[in-house]
Length: 308
Image (cartoon, rainbow, N blue to C red; front, side, top):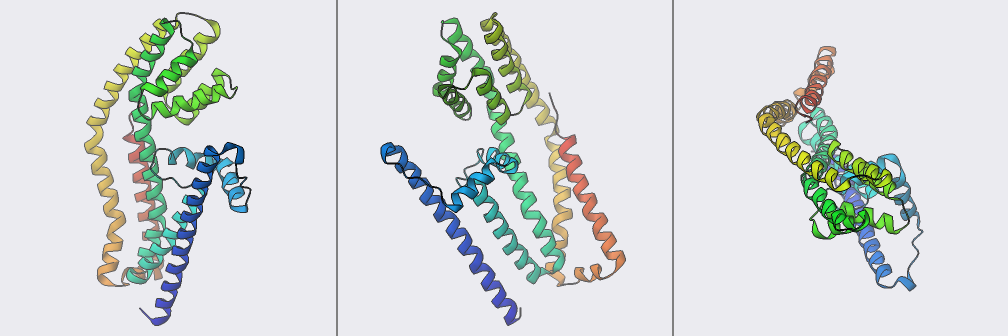
């Protein structure tokens, strides 16, 4: 590595570390300020700075709302905008290092691999959280049925779910109860819960509660039947997941080999792979290979997802 490249690397590392440090420190101060507002409600601090407005604006946008829903399933406490900036910084640093250490192909692979890998990790965490919530729905239906049979309201039953159940059901129903306390209708609060957790099981439970509470009917028997049905669907989904786990693992392993092989070859033989991109045949082969790998990963994710 030449001296100019070393200087560029040091400057890039310094800028990225400075960005990450400032982002973390900003979020740390915001969390402390929010805690102070909760403890001293009468002496709250108004935060209308530029960064806060940018965070709120991005969080209100469609990509920001979607990213916020996925971040709720992780242990990341940063805002959506901070996560995007940190991801961009890490991607640029890793791509720069791969470019100088293993060549242009490795840099391009890392440039696309980190964002898509992070997205896949977020999707996986979101699906795991949603699966845990679906697994809790039979017990949720039983609690609501018991509360209704005892003469309690649906809102009181939802409060019981938020206190007696573990996460994520407790979080979701606590947020729905909070919306009801703020004056939101039952249908709107439950619809927001369904939108945050899009699944057929959640939709069936929400629609049953909303329809029965609006037009009247045997809500207790309906919730009891739903609890039994959801229990059967959970067992069937578990069997389907077990039956397809081997095929999914093999497919992702083959795709990973196709992605990591160019990086390994470039690391072992210097910039020999970069010479392929200097010819039309090499560029066409690289484009076809990358397209086939991406299509294989997409098809694997679609074919291996069994909907019960």
